[in-house]
Amino acid sequence: MYGTQSKRDLSFEIQSQMTILRPSIHARRANIVVKFQDLYGFTVEGNVDDVNILNEVREKVRQQGKVWWSLEANKGANWYLQTYVSSALKSSLKFSVLVNAITLKRLIRKGIPPVLRPKVWFSLSGAAKKKSTVPDSYYRDLTIAVEGKVTPATKQIDHDLPRTFPGHPWLDTPDGHAALRRVLVVYSFRDSDVGYCQGLNYVAALLLLVMKTEEEAFWMLAVLLENVLVNDCYTNNLSGCHVEQRVFKGLLAKECPRVSAHLEALEFDVSLVATEWQRKKQEPAVMAELGQRLRRLNTTNMDVNTRLP
Image (cartoon, rainbow, N blue to C red; front, side):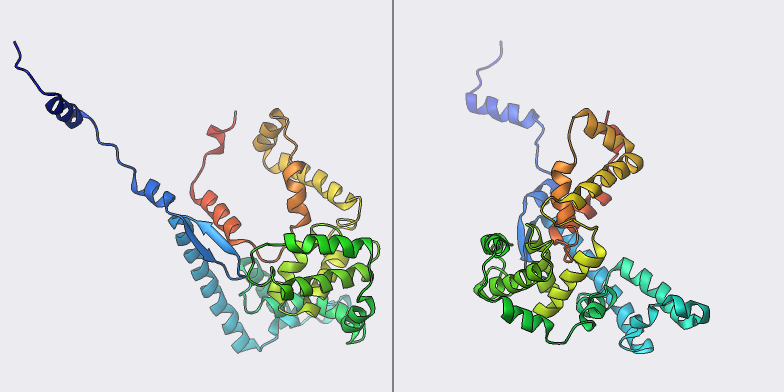
C-alpha cells in the first residue's frame, strides 16, 4: 500500500510533470505597444516589430537621400527639371537629358527624400506650370474675393474640418483648420463642377503638410483634380470612381484570380472598401502604419494557396 501524500505534495508532483508553457519572445514582443509620431506628425501605434521595420525604412530613406544630394552636387540643384522633352525637341534630344530622365524615373520609384518632396512634386506634377498661366496674385485675390461667402460647398467644408485627422498637432488646431478651409473653399469656387466632395479634405490636408504653404498645396490640388485623376472622380455622382472601381475589379481578377474568386464566393463587393481608398488614393504622405503593415505582409511569406480554397 502506498503511503499517504498531502495535497500540496501531490500538486507539486503534478506540476513537475507538466510542460511549462511560456509565451515565445515573438509573442511577448507583439504585445508591447509603442506609440510615436511619424514625419508628418501623425501618432502611430505598433509593436516592437513595427518599430524595427520603420527604422529599416528610415535607413533606406536616408541612403536614398544621399543619392539625391550627390546628384544635386554634381548636376546642379534643379537637375531634374532638365528631363522634360517636348515633341519639338525630340529630334534634337540631348543625351544628357535622356540620362537625367531615366535616372529621375528610377529615383522617384525608390522614393523622394522628404526634404525635396515639396520642390520636386511642385515642379514635376505640372503644378508650377499651371500656376505660371495666371497672375502671381491669383490665389491671394481669389481668397479675398470668396471670403465670407456661403455656399453648400462651404457648409460641407465647415462640417468636415473637425473630422479631418482629429488629434493632429497642427491640422486639428484653429490655424490648421483655417488654412485647410481656405484651400478647399478657394478651389470650390475655381471649379464649380467639382465644388467640394467629401474626401478632398484629406487630400488637401496632407498636401498642406507636405508642401508647407497654402498656395503650393492649392496648386497641387488643382493639378491632381484637373490633370492627374480620372475625370469626375470628385463630382457629386462620383462617376469617375465607379469607372475606376470596374477597372480595379478587372485588374484584380487578372492579376490575383484566386483572391478575386475567393471574394466572389463570399459574395463580397470589393468596392465597399476600395471606394474610400480610391477617393483618397492621391494622399501624398503614406501613413506609416499602412507602410509597416504592407512590409510586414511581404516579410511573413504567407502562402495564399493554403489560405484560399
